[in-house]
Amino acid sequence: MINVDENTITAAVLEQQANCPNPRLKQIMTSLICHLHDFAREVRLTEGEWEQGIDFLTRVGHITDDKRQEFILLSDTLGLTMLVNAQNNQKPPQCTESTIFGPFFVENAPLFENGGDITNGARGEPCRVSGSVRGLDGQGIPHAEVQVWQCDEDGFYDVQYPELDQAQCRGQLATATDGSFSFHSVLAQAYPIPHDGPVGQMLELLGRHPWRPAHLHFMIKAPGYQTLITHIFRDGDPYLESDAVFGVRSSLIADWKQIPGTGSDSGTATCHELNVDIVLNPVSATTTRNNHKTLEATP
Image (cartoon, rainbow, N blue to C red):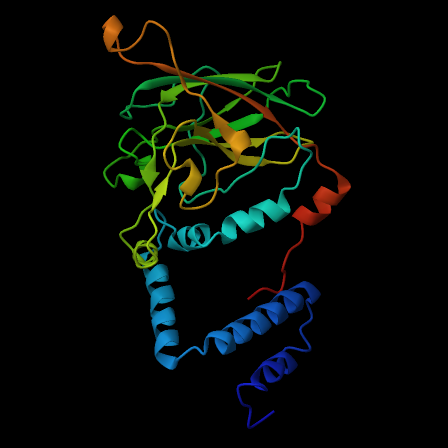
């Protein structure tokens, strides 16, 4: 098709991909192109504005490396990550809710014994976390893989310290035969997402703050159950209602209790305690099919 204009260009692009051999890829790209073109027409996008958009995305790519994922931050702050998460994690109400993954997960975290200390020198008030991993029937799930990670008292994850050569406040352990687990860490704190790059500039221009409420990350795996990626948030945090990445769920808010007899009045370091009961969703045939949709022909 030649001599396209603003009203016929969409059909011309769709015609060029009519022979796409992957039906799912064709469906996604058709919808994406239609929405992008409709967006440009709706706002009467100028060439200068689109150049700014390309420059913004280029800078997002340039700042991304093995320590920092600016594209995840962009997706998170636009609410897209949580939208995709919500529509792909519809579960029975008894199950622990899922939330976003975040940009600070690290593969091959150190292994710890159940009850171990994952702090490894990180700064913060001591905190003991305990809980259980159960199925919908209430029975504990033995030997479930529990991965946890969080920031220190200054609001930084271990991977944000260039000079640090060891994991801190990060680890993985297995539940006991009754599904119970425990570990020692530090008290979770609120922190801003990295905002010294293009995503931070975007938030500033939009009049938004970059803060996340205090939370502890979990990823839990067990044979026969859906993998759960979630947070547990600290009750009373001032950013619960305005999380920069929209990840808060009321069912995931918990109380970090100060253990009696600790703190300045007793002359000892303040210590806190958190109890978490997690319920996993069993894998079904439908779940398995949905989780294994792929775009084999994706470029």
